[in-house]
Image (tube, rainbow, N blue to C red; front, top):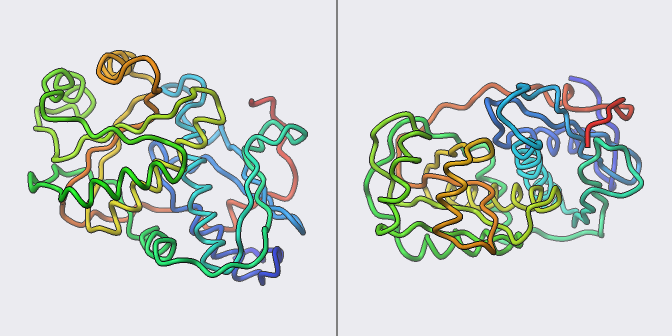
Length: 277
């Protein structure tokens, strides 16, 4: 394995572990469109758009959502290592590929929820089999909403009366006639710009890890390129919130892990030459 530099008083092996945990985030087609640059006093999160397929992601929405999820994992891994992360999204004076800069805000001890979410990182899977119809407890639904709010987002749990309006879009997204899982969750933000998408990615991952830590499984559904789904969700939610992602959440069989790049492959030494915004 490539040797990692030290940062934030962490030894290279710790830094490698942190990058490895960040790289376990979800991404479209397991594309892993993120890279990390480790400098003496900062970790940069870079977009790697070449890893995504050229179609199906208008405006790089899914790329930023995935990189936001990786950023949440990175934050949790740093907190687990005793570092309080301080994040700047889309820093103005950095390369266009830099989506976030992470610095140390001092030392901290992770709280119980941070530990639970960190431990859920390697257990989180994309469930590709139908979910069970077992109801999800109201207390767990509350935990999922709290997870979204912790990242400045809002989680709308679709009510049974709303399922009929979404049924056609849902069958199209799943490419099947499967019934909805116990929870159809729509993650929304107040904004729709690039920063909001990075914030949504962090909230999306926190919700998913919270579900995993409570013994639930989840299936992400495509949203970025499906205007029919967006229009349907807008009718349900009104004009103010912007739907960013949605998940089917319920109980299911354990899913296999997907292959991941070696952490050393996620490390870059120089800023990529790119006009990607």
